[in-house]
Image 1: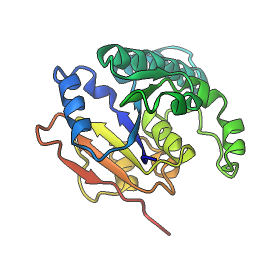
Image 2: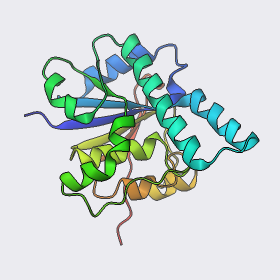
Image 3: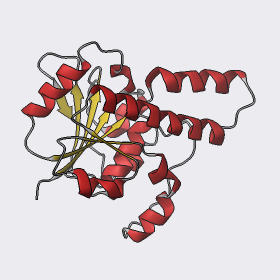
Length: 210
């Protein structure tokens, strides 16, 4: 059986004119794997951030509004990548992985059931992701990769982080969200790829260990 690769497509790439061709070219250059992708919120999520700053909106409400937007961006990606399958739950992945080179997940149902799913998977020691601005699609993708025991997590972004190439430093400078180092604990491998680069420049992101 092929290893599982969880891919986070950064929302900043949704306005990249060469997104479809670059993503297909990058996928074709990778070692064979089962590919499950999560798409970031991009400017849609920024609109919620602006509303949060202006109006009496709780972090909890803002969090779930942003999660719903990830379903919109997932559907957008599935429409511009017709070879991909759109999933509403990780449990659907097994049924489509042989028929499709890429699956795209709307994560809302998974996140609403996360506590139960973690317990069923033997990961009950993990607390559900916080419902706050500390968590974005970066941490959601990391938690999903851990839940599915993926061989690697790949963060497709518009740039690479500056050294040192650690998850902790990347969170400090805003390359990933603040909760990411905790969400990514125990992942086998984390790669960052600049999808806007013609050569798909990349680096590994390391986790500090005690």
